[in-house]
Length: 295
Image (tube, rainbow, N blue to C red):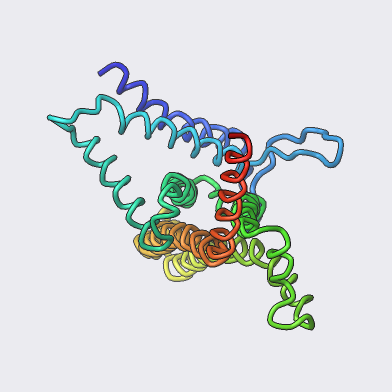
């Protein structure tokens, strides 16, 4: 029980620390303010300064929270009498494994932990806005970093067919299309990051503008009432919460799923299975010849 409490605290305290840091550094804006993540510190680096922002702090909190969540769900595993959290963990593993097998095939079954991590980090990052924090998915530098990692993974599997085959792909169907193919290749991480960032960021902007407009409408309707009655933002009660269900929860979670789905599609579509199998067959043949020669 004591260890469970420590694990739960490990999930909660990182977000509590981010909320406390935001409150201590908060400066009340004059009117509507739509800006990027707050900068907490700047560290001088050889190439360029390293900015420690609210987005990076919340990202670290999400990773720490997921780490302790995994420890909590997988503690005291049992074959005969599985607990509810073990059943939840098994359900997550089964669903992520099924998703990967359905979209990538049995060859890529080992991708399940990576895809689960992508969806978990992205989903929790978007849901952090419900705590009043700046969602890391609203920061292009964070999403861009994820897209670069996924792009490196996609390129790695494209190279499985050989460097020559990879470079030859830029000249297909004709050499004239080479510049367009090169642009299309490097447009992959750009499109992945901008799609995710644009959908989440636009939701935050729309919610902020609408909340401000509803506050102004409340003041316009109730402004002539005496005392504190004129300050009640009656139209801001309920409507922003309904919008939050879509922009903060549904849209954030669906974008996490789409980002993971695009990663799976790009990897499987870019993997040259026939060329890879041919290379492996030649490699096995060479090894067999070497064994015969040594014997």
